[in-house]
Image 1 (cartoon, rainbow, N blue to C red):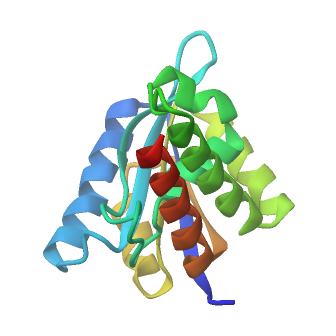
Image 2 (tube, helix red, strand yellow):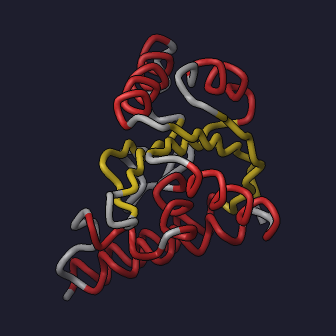
Length: 181
């Protein structure tokens, strides 16, 4: 089993624009280093009605059919593990069963890669603000990611372990089934 260790950085914000600014700072950090495929990120917003929606995301572009590098969709998966209805507000679940299965697989891998205590703490942190930023990156780039999230009211780092080969296999199988349908 090829389990890899990633780190999830969960930032809590009172202002959505601050989360957007830090999202851009993390993106710029990876762009400057030439590592755009080495992280995943998702901005979440709590609506006045209390619902959570994903308003922006960056995922490793090769995650379906040829997963390589980075968090391979784990930021979105982590958000969905914490807030299963978040995908519904953004239209992320594709009209096909394959789209829902893919997101379910990502959520399952993300949830399985973290302790229950860390999942609970991450959910509580995101619940505390009106916006949040979840960034999953490779462990050796972690301190730089956390330092880029300067506008966050609070940032916590949580270890996330995932079997990259199994995730690649699962997403590839789901993508192939969706194409065949």
